[in-house]
Every structure is written in C-alpha cells, then in structure tokens.
Image: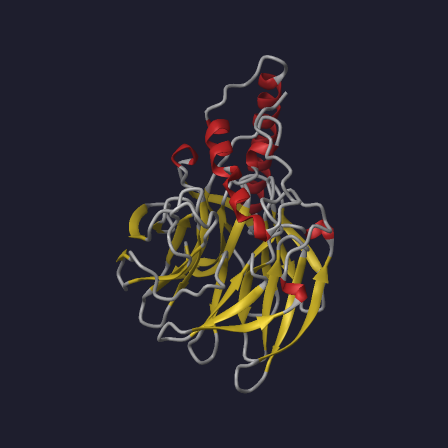
Length: 367
C-alpha cells in the first residue's frame, strides 16, 4: 500500500479557491521522507531501481549515438519544498523558480546553482510560476493566489531587477488575477499572462497597466477529462508570434491558437489539438521550424512535439522526468542546442514507490 497518492480533487471549482490548500507540497514532503513499507514496498523500490538503470543505459547509448536524450542537469530539495516550476534562459544560463518558496535559482550547464532572486514566498497559499526576461535583463515573475484570505502574497507580476535581487511588491496586479501561470511578450513589449483559474489572457503594458487581452471558453479548464488536478487548470503555457499566440490548456489536454492582427489584437481562437490523453499540457516553447515543444505534466510526465497541424509526437516519457512543468530552448548549452525542462515533482508520489525528484533536466542535442 502506498499512502503517498495525490487525492483526486479534479471536481474543485475556481470559486472554492480555499481548496487549493489541499497541500500537494505537504504530500510531497511526507512522501520524500517515507520509508518503504513492509508489504512489498522494498520490492517495488528494487524494481524501480532496475528500471531506472535500464533507462539510464538506454539514454547513455542514445547520447553516444548522437541522438537526443534526457539528462539531469541539477536537482533541488523536495523536503525543503524546492519544487521547480518556472523557467527562463538567458546568456547561456537557466533560471528556475521554486513554486512555494519564491526563490529563483541561476543554473549553468554544469549544474552549478546560484541564488539569483526572490519574490514573497507563498508556501501553499501562493506559487511562483512563470518567468520571463525583459529586454533590459529584468526578470518578470508570475505569482498566484491560492487562498484568498490566508494573507498570501498579492497575485500578479513581480519584477526582479537585472542582475538579480528581490521584488517585495508586485509590478502589476489586477482584481482578475487568480492563478497567473505562463507569460510571453508581444511585439509591442506588452507581457501576455495566461491565468489558469480566470481562463483568460491578460496584457500588461511596460508601465504595469493590466487589461484582458482574450477571454474564451476554450481557455477555461473543465472537469471533462476527470484529471487528477488540484483544480481545473485552464490556460497555462503561452508563446507569441507575429500572427498568432499559442496557449496550452492543462485540464482539457489542448493546444490553442489565437489569431493576432497587425495591431497585436487578439482574434479568433481555434483548436490545434484537444484530447484527454494529453491532459497535463503545461509549458510550451516555439522551435525554429514553427513546431512547439510541450511539457506534459504527470508522473513521470512527457515531453512532446506538436505541429501547428495538430500532430503530436512524444519525444520522451521516462526518468529523469518527474512532473515536467516548463520547457525552453538553450542554444550553446554544453556546446550544442538543447531543450531544458523543469521537474515540478508534483505527481511523483502518486506512483507506487514514487519519490519526488524536482530540478532541471536537458533534452538534446537538437538540430
């Protein structure tokens, strides 16, 4: 028996945001220190060890052959709630946000970690999610509000100065913000923010003014897929091009296209792909060929390539992935081109014998 299963809370509604204190992070803490149980736990652990060795051998062989493979870059401490979520890449370094702690780490290609910045820690009441660098090196950090009356940090967009440091109050906030998750700049320098609870995309001007850029039923999460999520997580990852924005919807297993006109205004929403087998779509990144790389959160989760025509190819689906949350491209990483992925480890304990393994993973080399 495994007492570390994540409870099925997919029927929660956004109006009952207090229920986000179901403490997924507390479950992780308990599981990270749980000994193997006598009723077969040790056997399961041994089987997992053998499977992990097989996966590592296959990955090593793929690397030797020059094929893309998964490699652990750096790990963080699950028992200290260091659950990696947000990700940005700049000047050959990766920057990851630790969801409950408000900490941003800088990580180089050798896995060396440096404390880079901080926003107010939310614990289980507010998570540090999307990270987006501005043109001057400032880092925009998206902070959620999980429990409205728990004294959580104000939700919205925080701005860490270029070079690192702390942001103690939001650069931009709005009464409509609930779960700001993914962000991307448009052609005019406005930050588009996907809010997973509000089911809409906000636009934040360089001066911090907030308006709704797009609201649509397809951006809202639903319970149709019966997903084991803390609430029906809607609009999540987002990327922007001159003619369209692409948005993932976690609960619906969908990737959406939002047309963009010459003035940067949002147009019609269309479905690129929508299937319950892709529940967990999280962060997305735009490749040079116009396709998307998508993290599919879960245990262990997947990395997928999605074409604008809706074809989905699973690139990786095994250890060291553990709840992949965000993905970004890193050119020149270890002398090549790689995709970097954060492991949030939210769902690792839901597997028999599972233990959370948060951190940063690479996939490559890529063309």
